[in-house]
Image (cartoon, rainbow, N blue to C red):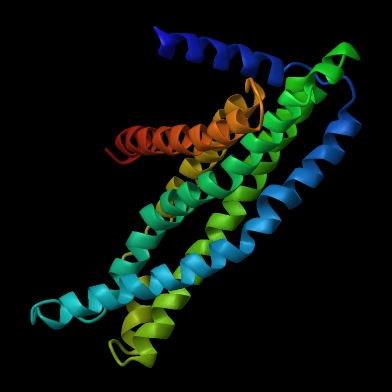
Length: 247
């Protein structure tokens, strides 16, 4: 029964979040701030993870190809492309962002709740859920696809760099593998997933923080719950979308 209670309260929160804003100009400024806070500040960790994971995928694939005489060398680039575009960049990076961005949002809203800042906004007649959460959701939906596209490019570059520098694969074979039988819809599929993941990460994390009760200890617990719940939701939605789009 507790699950249905939280689902109902989550739905009621979303109704408040998407209620017509009192003043669009204020929300626009908040969206720009959130793009910087959520997206721009995450470029570093996304770039590092993408390069190293692309390199690891390349090394592991090259090791497997080396032991199979029937498998062409360009399979290294092909496998790296498919792994990075279909699953690594949209799903794994979003799970990392769930930890970084989700915990930040939950702790921010949780602190505002326990220090009665949200109550003060409501006393002044401000739709606190819309003012605090709506800009975060819009900013994430806007900036996450750019982060994922950057991740795809850096992941493929990391695979190329480590493959060529270690002699595991030639530059020509790797690039040919990336181009071989490329389906542009795979990128579209990845970005569709990213938009759903962005909404889930922000809304679930915001829910955990917005309804925090107690003090500093409860804020920490809400932050942990935000990461766990949003990660589980991302994995479930990933399975559902994969079945619906590619099944």
